[in-house]
Image (cartoon, rainbow, N blue to C red; front, top):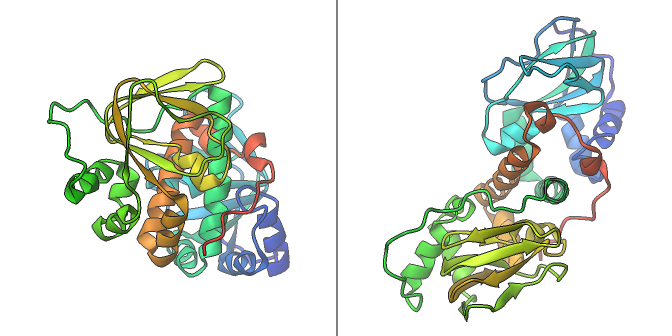
Length: 322
């Protein structure tokens, strides 16, 4: 039910600043987001968004309480202030729970199309949101002891690629879902100054705690990742390692060691940020990859909606694009 608006633009900006991932947003994109908001009051018992429908808006619950239906969990309640639908919209996923107002609820809504238009206009907003998602992903990985890359391509019986050939290096990058979404022209630019590293079995690709200066794409061979907790995973061709750390600007979370001779393409995260600044589809691919990873790590549907204490922690400024 729509009612006359009672929350002014300054108060809307303050509400945004109170919630992840907008807590460190700069003044101009913050004001622009506040101008896009419309105010709705949903009476107790009213539905918010039906389950199974793609997220088409970003909603900010500023008053009241929402309850998730059909999860089987008695305590699946969202308290104000809370952001709803942003992660799913960026990930291109459906909302996984139906929400209803347990009390009268006031919601500020940003239409999805308008939000994406603003992302395209304000690159600093892309940086801010990716930084917040990157920190949330890192915290969720630590909490769950899960650093497995999102998509591990199945082992291939194809012959080893000839990585002296540019086309084979392009195909190696194209196997990675996020990079594939960037397009051939962008991948060619990323490869311009990055030779292939040939590593022997037992060689360390990078060590936990060291500065994440490169993103490693495994073009051939096998690498084992080991966290401080002892958790391990195995990665093969088509896997991207260290991407969240390098794009977020935090140290590597695990040590990557070659299980067998391996060929690795090391990408400079600054080049990806430059491409994202120049091409909005690249920015969307970077945001979508982090949003999909966060949804997987958060597990329970309501956890994907609720702001966690870890995600609320202030994060450092996003990397500046030269």
